[in-house]
Image (cartoon, rainbow, N blue to C red; front, side):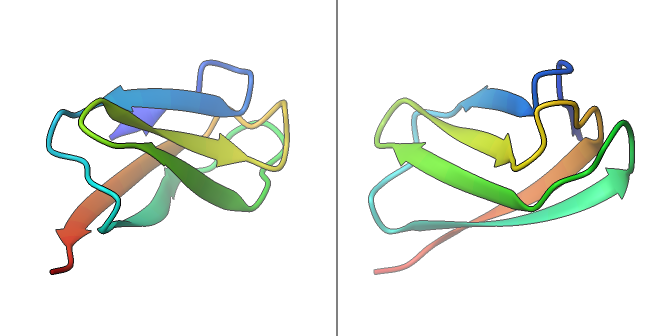
Length: 68
């Protein structure tokens, strides 16, 4: 589980991320003003979880699925 640092964005280092990775996100604990969750991939480096709210301080869990 990862908490947002108060800015509605958190970056997760993970060198196994590829362009085919799909990340399923779920909010475990709501905090601040919650917003819709999205993510962006940086292959072989990381992924970034973004909230539509800049004041989202929620805790988020994720599962990574790799499609061939």
